[in-house]
Image 1 (cartoon, rainbow, N blue to C red):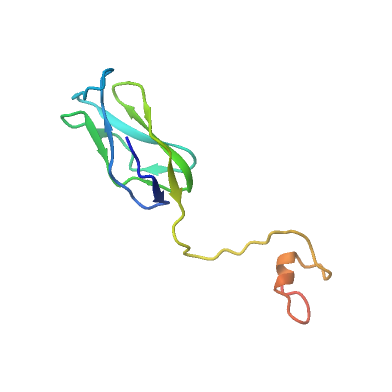
Image 2: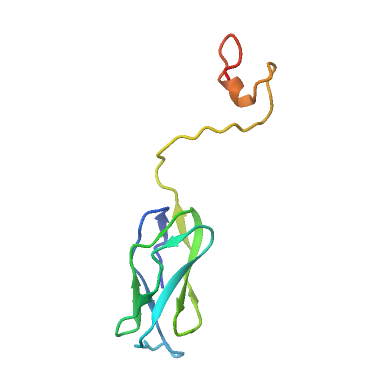
Length: 128
């Protein structure tokens, strides 16, 4: 199982496959399902149970993660075999799409306005 090395938050990615194998590394063809979950903050969409094919391979497409950071995928099987964890991959933010003003509340200036409001001061005093 190998996710892409990096993807953007909320952008679907494909190509993640999980192969059922025996203790010797041989492919196992069996009637089973495989599911994916996320290690790290955020929500993984598209990781619901997928049936394995005739070679024991489960393919996942249209996966996405909503929060940025370092993540790992965990694959589990309906057979109860030991779960597998992917290598880490990075979820990066999408391009900026909006502005958000916040008041850092770092203190007040000489007229009692917050530092943020003081930065917006008109000549006659603070803008509120």
